[in-house]
Amino acid sequence: MRRTLLPTAMVALLLVVPVSAAVGGAVAVPGAEPGFADGIAATDAALQERPNPCVGTMERTPNQSTLFSIQGARGGDKTSAMVVSARPNGSIVGVHNDTAAGRWWSYDIDVLPNGNILQPTTQSRHTVIEEIDPETGEHVSERDFPEAFDTHDVDLINGDELLVNDMSQDGEDRVFVYDLSREEVVWEYYFANYSEHYPESGGGEFGGDWTHNNDVEQISDGTFMVSVRNFDKVVAIDRETKDVEWTLGEDDNTTILHEQHNPDYFEGEDGTPTVIVADSLNDRVVEYEREDGQWNRTWVVRGGGLNEPRDADRLPNGNTLIADRRAHRIVEVTPEGDVVWEMYSPFQPYDVERVGTGDESSGPTMADAGATGVVEATGSADFDTADVEACYDYLTSFEGSRLIPDDELAAITDPSSTDTIDTESESDTAGGSDGGDDSETEPNESESVLGTPTDASGPTPLGTVLALAAVAALFVGALVRLRRR
Ligand SMILES: [Ca+2]
Ligand SMILES: [Ca+2]
Ligand SMILES: [Ca+2]
Ligand SMILES: [Ca+2]
Image 1 (cartoon, rainbow, N blue to C red):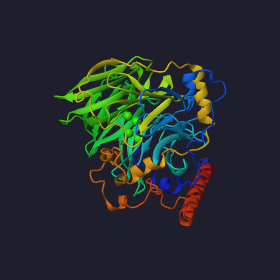
Image 2 (image 1 turned 120 degrees about the vertical axis):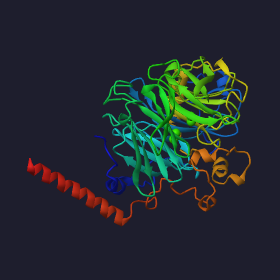
Image 3 (image 1 turned 45 degrees about the vertical axis):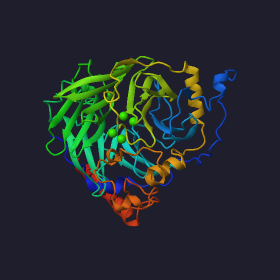
Image 4 (image 1 turned 120 degrees about the horizontal axis):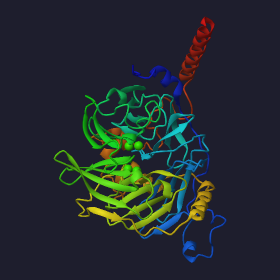
């Protein structure tokens, strides 16, 4: 017996919690960054030229800032879960500290069409989805999903739906769609209902960390791509029929994928389906193309210290931006594997996004770039544990939680204001084909896309009354059950 829809009225009433200022911190003042943390080798001339101790190789400075999330774990120790924004030269725009807001883990980040940042986090073994103001780092909105366990990815699709992973811990692993207008779950896919694709004997322990489904993406109208990590495969699922349209990878066949993260789907110039994947336990990033019903591996970057990468985004310039988990760094590599941009990101980065390049990857494919094959990553800065520690100290003491600089934010919310930002992939971001409705032309950067039913200052009186009534009803119900025992 599988769960059906969430008790949606309760969820909507109790758990939609607008928050006006969950995290403090002043807006960053450009240029007013703290100095080097203690313990940095101040005699190192090369290091002295760096704006902070988190900067690694800087062979090339990109046009926009880079956002990355840090899960916050070092060995068995809990460290700060953060979202960090770095300027092209590696200087820090701001740091959003989720541990300070009471969260535990911090995962996939998406820049929404209004410039806000969407992110799943966890607190007390359940999922909290945050929408973060890019100017202040404050939470415009937070939503609790108490029945969703340890969600690693949520995407905004079709303008008003959230596509969400739920790893569960009871065999009820699922992907679901939450309709923000109707305030309810409108679609669910329980992996255990499809044993032909996900037998209970496969993946991790059934009833425990079984599927570890860790990434979702709407790759076309009505098709969801899902990373089922513990089955070493990525599947494309038809929303209507729930049929599996294609599969990349095979459980325990680790020559294809091994406990992967964050596959991105895009297409070659001739429409060839292409997926780039952080092939985590193979310590590499791989690109596959689909031809005649077969997935062919076209590009691999490995070596050079790559250690369990968890995100890889293809940038419009053909380079690949990688969140390298156990190396505690973000690297941008060329098709030939040269590291051209590198930031330390302690401890355990999860996702990285280059501001203004669209959500995740938009191409080009390595086949179209004429750069197929296996390449070795080279050119990382020669950094050690002390460097990473110094970076951690710097980030956790950084004052200012702004995440996107003003000019870059303007380019996102009003693309006509500048032509320096590549916005060609906006249809991927929203998952819809017509991103030009009237509401988008209005200045709306302070609004919440999560669609809290009230303004950001708190629940309406009616909402509060209904929520309290619902709590009271639960309490009375529990009392009645106790007395019957
Ligand atoms: Ca996402
Ligand atoms: Ca996604
Ligand atoms: Ca990605
Ligand atoms: Ca990414």
